[in-house]
Length: 251
Image (cartoon, rainbow, N blue to C red; front, side, top):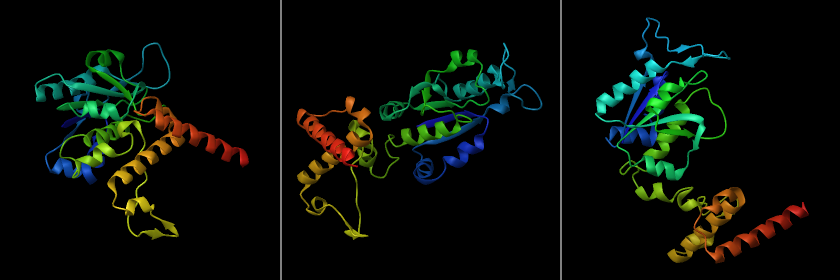
């Protein structure tokens, strides 16, 4: 997997993506991350890439030509038209299935905007995907790009030492992850659930499934709409909701 990030602040990408699991994956050859400085393609000596928007309005707008030339440098390098992701609050909200989909690509380009955005004409020319990481505004697209790259990277074979951990964590299967415990068996008076010490794998799997359902129903009930849930489990969720409602009424 090769990530190409079109940005005004390449040092953010280079420093943020060369540590921990992602840094090891880069060192191991499973990933590459190239930060392309859009200012390098400015057509003036001050490397200015923004200008006032037509029609007036507050702020400045990134110009089309430097962005296009930066993109074109990537296209020429890889020899094909890549998938280009523009980070914007107007895009589809990023989720785990999208991470899995993007991980199938050989090359991904992330376009990071700043100021009041980017000239619409270059977006129409090069962008294939408009993606948001949430309904809020940030100062630029670098942090969303790094969030997405981190998530996508986990789906790339070889990036994780134990590939299963990339598939069984939160949001896999549409449910939140079950609680997990390590040594010691008792800490601050809190004990590890006995079923996890039993060695009975079927019972452990059943407990984990129930805990995932419970957490999702309590903290992210919106995810239940698309999760694969049996009629028996729906009945269990309804029972929990009655109990939670009763507890709330007591307070």
